[in-house]
Amino acid sequence: MEDFVTNEIPGVGEIRARRGTSTAELAGAASFWHKKYQHAWRDGFLSACVVLGLAGIVAGAVIHIWF
Image (cartoon, rainbow, N blue to C red; front, side, top):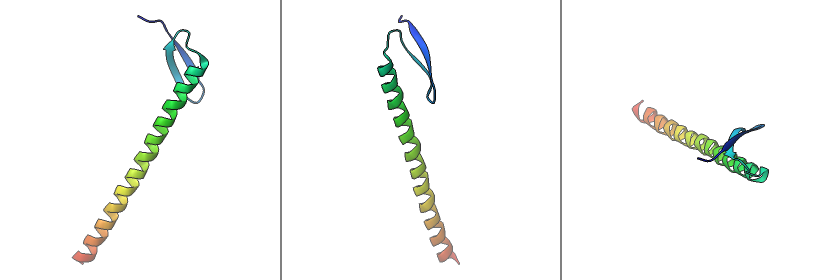
């Protein structure tokens, strides 16, 4: 089993890495995961906006036809 150390990076949180991992590797990994999750939140928000917009259009059409 490998020996792991835990590092606290401000603004990112706790990162667990193998002993001897360079700071550059840790920074690259933190940057990669930050960007990945940032895009996931943005994409999820945009998807929710599109779905709500389409639901509004459908509701408006149903109300217009029904009344």
